[in-house]
Image (cartoon, rainbow, N blue to C red):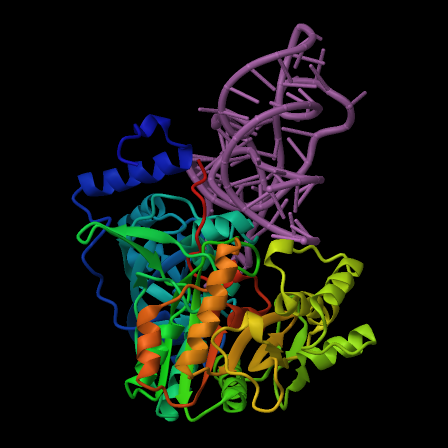
Length: 498
RNA sequence: GGGCCUCUAGCUCAAUCGGCAGAGCAACGGACUUUUAAUCCGUGGGUUCAGGGUUCGAUCCCCUGGGGGCCCA
């Protein structure tokens, strides 16, 4: 805030700015280009963990870290330096060792939050704390804002607005970043072992298709043309399959212009994979392996401990149910693809499910009824198979049962984690499905899937039979940690506070 | 979209019935050579989210708007 006169700043900000100014005015460096580190906090901790209380070495190291604890007992100062992973190492500054001037400067210049360099011998204090007995110290970077209290969690709002502070203050925030990275890495390595090729498909699209969702729109000046941010990479990945990239995957962001809540973010990370000559059964095996290996690689176990302490088991075989079968069981009457819309409406009204009459059809009602009577109660990992055809315009019809499609949704802890199809590859049927979506759109369904003519052209060049799968990455992290979606995303969208 | 809760010091939170706006940590001045959220003495720090209303008087009650959270759809 360069325009704010320092008089108007809160005391703690003003004090730090004055220290910076004083250091610089005296010819010192508040922000040196570097400091001569010889080791890291983590390495020193690991290398000297065997030292006993009071033991000292002649090994001299130089390390730097953020000051998270500061104690001054007169002619002796203690400072705890923290690295980005939360590892801490104490430094002791004794007047006898660093000298009177250096100690006085340390007391005058250093605040909680600063990055500080110390060089000295490694040993263990009388109280048993591994320490550097500083022979010299140097400011590595001066903090102008005070750290929050480190003994209490930040408020949920502060966590997302200032994630960088959250990362300094809260171990769970630091873990999430690294766990997420480990999960993504595990997924990629798993795909690479299976000879899948990673591609990136367009974010900016002339037609946003491949899912039932409302897109963000934008404008390209050079072509004076409206564009959409993608809602799914599906159609492009299928074009890649047509072109011979027969095992293909993408990990990237999708954007949906819909509500945001504890399980929906307007931009979210999505994994999609397609396998020529696979089907929804091979996709189920693939998905289970991806999730279980990700849990093992990132957490060391398939029985993960959630944020509330609960243990959740992702290991072993997963339950497998069908949509019509499980709905029939829940209702105590047989529901089939032939069940009339009128009867489904009666059942929906009985369950007090609200629906838009002008968008209603057999498939939507069955899915609504299923979510209400079955889906909301699903907790253990469960594949839900064989969806109505109306709601799955990109999925091929079931190989033996008419009226349903070869699609499954994977439910984990009550929410939808992944979905997969035996892909529809008949270009004539695909065109008919798009035509039906167009009718829904004309009737006012703003989530109906848009027709992509170039996609249909691609299909006419013949796409091999294939299985396809999509999984929300943020949701995978939610499933593995029990956190809300905004905790799994490093910098989630936040409205400006003023 | 609807309902409920919430916004106070740098941070986390109090403030009884509408009556001087507080605590812990943090900060400032001082003491202290083994601290682990040290201890001791002293001090300062507020646009109570914004705007309006009621009132002698509003953090508190009412209205409008904004941010955040939860539940429902």
